[in-house]
Length: 131
Image (cartoon, rainbow, N blue to C red):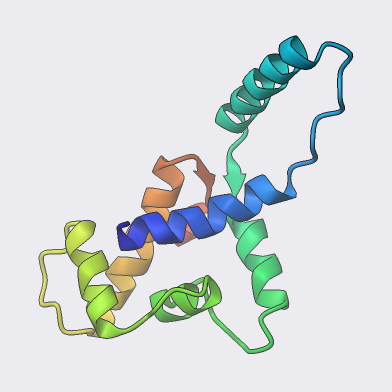
């Protein structure tokens, strides 16, 4: 799985886990199909509130992680290896054309690119995190 895929799954998976289960209906076969269809439609219609999920995770992290500006802290918050090698892989995935040296420039670009990709994939991300 790609590094961005791991980031997306970590955030969007938390949103799915927070959704309440549908109540049981009398017709098990028809109800299961209806519930599955309704759940898929609701998931497609409702954007995932990335800010709220990450803010809640940060509150429970047990350490100060500045996920709003730091790609390293964002990855740590999600339990993803934030090593330079992983950040280089992520940069290549997302189309970074600068030097893959772990510089501030690369890391700032990565953070904004990740936030833009999350927004493009159904995430609700504040504009100041994507600009």
